[in-house]
Image 1: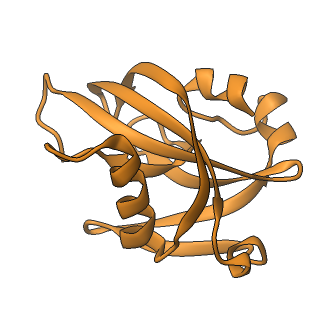
Image 2 (image 1 turned 90 degrees about the horizontal axis):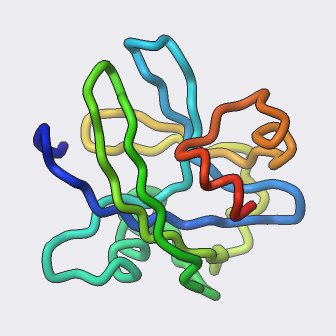
Length: 142
């Protein structure tokens, strides 16, 4: 986990299949609120954001990516579990190399000690405000 006052650099992957997107579910205990975010993770020193994206998908859900295209950079200032956070997000559009990932309803994986769920969600559920997508600028890319 990152230290307070640190800016974190993340590489996240936007994966679409028709009118749905593959997304990771999170929960803020302080706000008692479920939220959703693209999958990916932190960029390590000496690693490109693209390499980090591929490594994270491999580590978390044993998935290979293809058709990786850089979309842009987002800056995210937020409060999670009552702590301020600051992220620079390198956003990529990509596809799963293995078609089996498109057949899954959901996938449970471990991130450190935490169990997380990734699932296919209809994009319209984020656009309508029914479900919360973070950071909000992410909606511009869907």
